[in-house]
Image 1 (cartoon, rainbow, N blue to C red):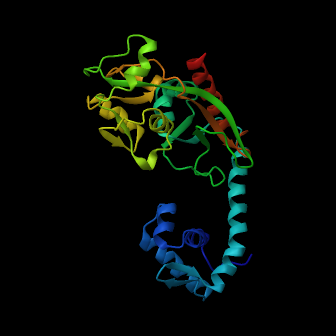
Image 2 (image 1 turned 45 degrees about the horizontal axis):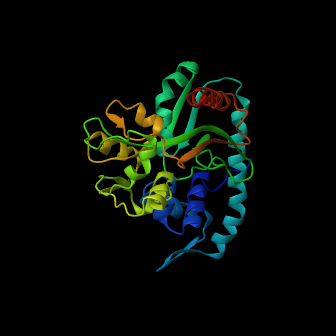
Image 3 (image 1 turned 180 degrees about the horizontal axis):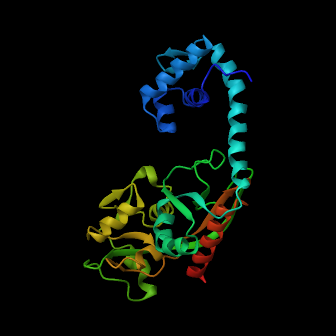
Amino acid sequence: MLKSPYDWDDIRVFLAVYETGSFSGAARDLGLSQPTVGRRIKSLEEALNNRLFERLSEGLSPTESGVMLASKAFPMAEAAEDLNRQSALLSAETVGTVRVSMNEQAGMLLSGHIAKIRAALPGIELELITTHLEASLSRREADLLIRFCKPKQGNLYGQKLTEMPFAVFSSIEGTVPAVKHEEELGAWLWKKDHPWIGWDEEHSYQPDAAWMKATLKSVTPAIRISHAMMMQTLLQKNLGIGLLPSAAGDADPQLKRLTPDIPGLLNNLYLIVHGDLRFVPAIRSVMGEMLNVLAKTTS
């Protein structure tokens, strides 16, 4: 067998630079340092005896050699990803690590059920990733996704996990009075002296942020946040009132509920898996247990 003149890891770095157009972007995507990315590209150029990128003022531009290498390397990378996914099917044991990527609100909800899932699946190590970013199932950046919307990509399968209503909460030491009667909710929400905590503009796509922007148009939050778990922390510290997933707020002994579930602010959570991975024993077991424990919260 002929020995390859280059390291496959160098090719992975090359493809990341090719896609992002910079060493810094590739470093960010791969979790490497920028100097490491630079050294990898230099090593590959020396092995191939060809310059792969031209350094321009607006960034890196691939040379003809770089374009040719990319045309050959991208199919190789896709084949490697497919092999990586398919190899998981070779194990018939319910053991190993299952990576679950979710938005923060889902993380707040799921955290109350992790003990039950772990007790049911002691041979599985759970890796829980809370992020705004969409992890790639095809690249095995995660095995499962939990999101507010159904998958639109081909070969991804989504199943409704649970419903997520929201309510307004404050610290148990807060002085804002709770809604006494449901018919008073509208007038209560429109009170301008409530010390609201809301999302910043960059995260206005979050379902609770979108609802506040559409419904409480005259309300200006006293504090804006970029992470749902920061909302919970600020509420605990009695710095205002804010929206939380009802199950997460009700389970927090440092918080008190101020409203019933907000009408019109009910979101479905979906559990999403790649088609090549849905029959992997460990992943299928985690999916089943999540569906089991969360279904009971809405039944």
